Length: 428
Image 1 (cartoon, rainbow, N blue to C red):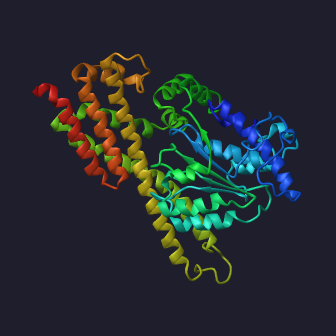
Image 2: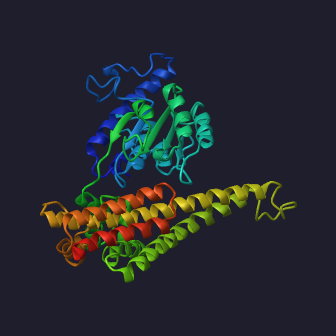
Image 3: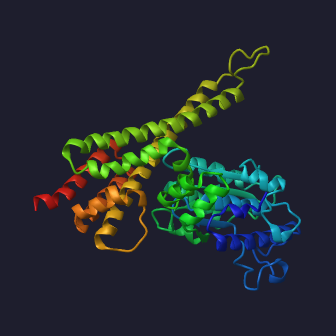
């Protein structure tokens, strides 16, 4: 097995920085074991492989990983957590990928590494307080208690404040790794961001994604090349597009809306089909997750037993199952919004491609496979200002969905605005 940081695609410089920080953290852990009280200071000559000047900056108790979707924010945080817990005696090979700590962290089963993923549209203050309280304990098997918040942009204001309190005065053995799309105040509070060391990831290149799909996933080179070119720099989506017919169908429906919106007879039917397909895809994803969770919960509550007194689950089981169903319903809503949002991003990128063609810019297309049959004809039909209005309509729709507007109403309004924008040239 290779080093865990080899999983970071196109992020070589960041991987080197995280390795250096993990080596410094190992020295810091030894100093804490010996009763040191001088905080995060580690003399330069005590950190193997770290140049002078790295000492105070090399390790901190709170980190913020940012980057566009698919850049690998949560993967980077998990790899760093593995390196912090790594048991390899060779300090130059932290994150070895072979020791028990690395294997369990990457499998998300390590007892001292908690992954926080909001099940609904947001992460509430109650859940965050429980997490913070658990994280304040001393680690059981590893060097650190590590909390990875994979969608820190979904923290409610109260939850962010609860997290801020512990980040400002962290327990000596606790490390917080937050993941968010950007450092924009809408994604992460200014105060919370100021308490974290920032790690900015970038979207991997199509060539890097293609290499991963071929070498790591064993996909056909031609299919891998196509998926890498249309995924928008998102490795996970490239994998789904290359292997899942439903994902390809969802993309086609989103892109076909650009042509359908220009005609009243097809616009709203296409909009309803897009919403309906997104809901169906979300239900399929949620059903698979729900079934496994429900069976696990029932087993934990004693269902399926054959001994005396096991015919019924214990009192209170119905309440636990009802609470689980509530969380699953909230998660299904979030999954549906995420699936629809991905389709809208594809649609906005298509109008962007047409706009690029219209103004003669020499940049890479987001949907190169649609240049001849959609992007170029659309650029010849609509002026740049019309195409820009279409992009704005899609972005406003995404914002409306984020404000909990019903998908049908938001998408219908978007289609109406796109239709008006594209008709201006005909009416002029």
